[in-house]
Length: 75
Image (cartoon, rainbow, N blue to C red; front, side, top):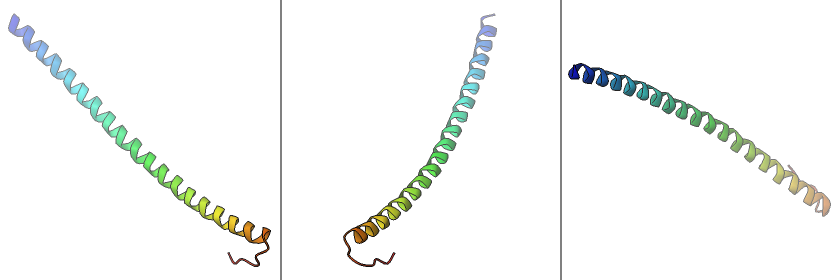
């Protein structure tokens, strides 16, 4: 009787372990997917920031030259 209970308990523990491993794998996969997606978003934001900075510098030069009468500026 005791051996049967032990076997049943072991089977239940193994099933629980398997479910936990599946859950762990799900969350690992989700984490990797989320990190990859956020990295893509970050790369796009960095690119947009660089373009915006370049445009700001261009406009700043234009305003400086036009406000201080330093002549024609080729952009």
